[in-house]
Image 1 (cartoon, rainbow, N blue to C red):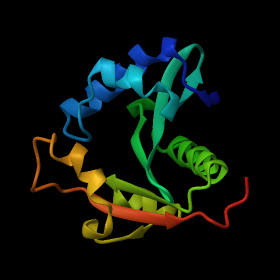
Image 2 (image 1 turned 30 degrees about the horizontal axis):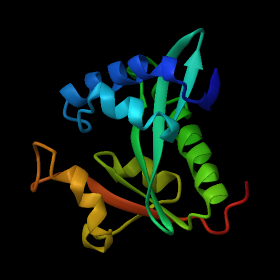
Image 3 (image 1 turned 180 degrees about the vertical axis):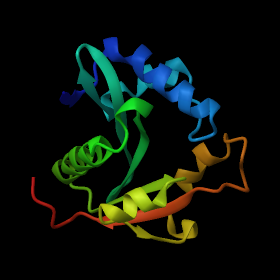
Image 4 (image 1 turned 180 degrees about the horizontal axis):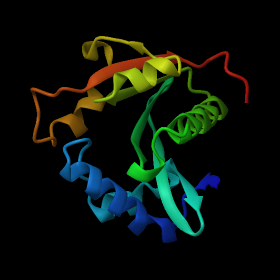
Length: 155
């Protein structure tokens, strides 16, 4: 199993993961074009030539980034892969100079286990809401906002 930066060749596999989980209502659908545009934000987990998980780090403001599109394929869940992805994304955030990382999640327990605290959505910058407006669940979203201070995290 290898965790690495995503490449252009991975985008179709990422899109399959996103589409599968979006159809279940677990995250927002993302068009293929959007994933190509943001491929540099993604890391992937590859096993035997297949992409089994992914996650992205999206910078939202001067000191704030979002962990988004965190997906682990069903057969690989519960093995710590999601936590490894988030840890790698947090290290990327530290290298960029980001001090806090947040997530909007239907599974807040996962993020709480790895050091995130629940926050009020209203404290997030308005820039974050541009994606929420596209969601079919808006404004009655069931996602929980969580945040973690990473300014003292070591690389």
